[in-house]
Length: 372
Ligand SMILES: *Cc1c(COP(=O)(O)O)cnc(C)c1O
Image 1 (cartoon, rainbow, N blue to C red):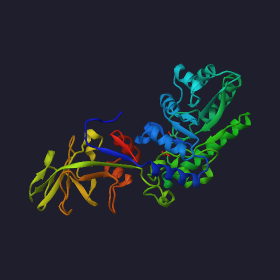
Image 2: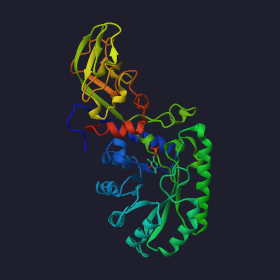
Image 3: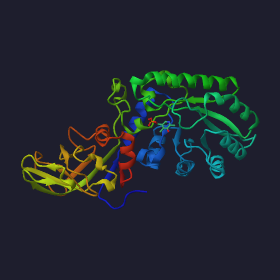
Image 4: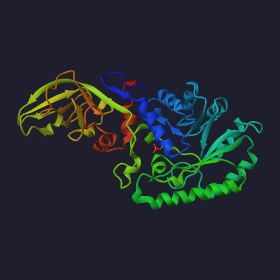
């Protein structure tokens, strides 16, 4: 579903997603491509097809519904549903469509065992909480989990997973080490209990920074889309070589003078300190371009930077084109990416927005997309 009432164009460069995947594969041999939430706003099916053609054999989405959509698109490899099978319908779809659900409760484990059978046990991924305190079994649940698995012949533990809270913050590496140590104890105990499975804990940041935490499978998400999860840290260089796949543009509606002393837009938060020229662009907060970018964001027009002036409105935003030659109605304004030496990077946009690249992609990706 996309926003249908605007002039925005979200361009997805699938070749860059393929290249990012191959770059990641050069660092970690068995990546599960994380394409949840419509591939972080890049489009589930086109991204999945690109990754499958590049050799991805396992992909993970959020809901079982999204997993089914991926299966119906023709992907024949392994599909994981990170949010798990939440009811009997979900469990039945896991069986018919060969989807591996994350499982974080004994109740769901028993429900899945009913959908499977001793002859054809359903493969599941046990999710352990090692420090996120979100979903998952805890280390102290292991005896109970092992006990339950002895009687639940309709399921088979195919994967054991956990998730890092601060692997993208090297200054908090202690916590990442603690989480990893807990995970090591969890997988050892489950293996000692007689289970054979693949272990996975590394997200993009850990995949790039901590090879010793790779285990059998790694789970890159944001890196596939070309944002560097280590941006701004002391180890940012470990994420070099990724290329942003999303670019977003919109037309300039009008260019006009803003004489010294005149204010612009709601609230009169910007007053021209000199005679200026401004371009009014066709984008606003109704297009998921945050009003928080008022007076702080920047666009690229005709290969030059055009800072936002005043408040972002519902469907329009003013930018400074005083020093950009020959800007005219119909020119293209880039909110993300763009031509010339200084495109708007995802990290820069996210910082100005007061968020992370993930959210900027998910939200801007709601606008009409084209693929190249
Ligand atoms: C989203 C997600 C990932 C990917 O994380 P990135 O930081 O985007 O690499 C990995 N594992 C789980 C369980 C996730 O939900």
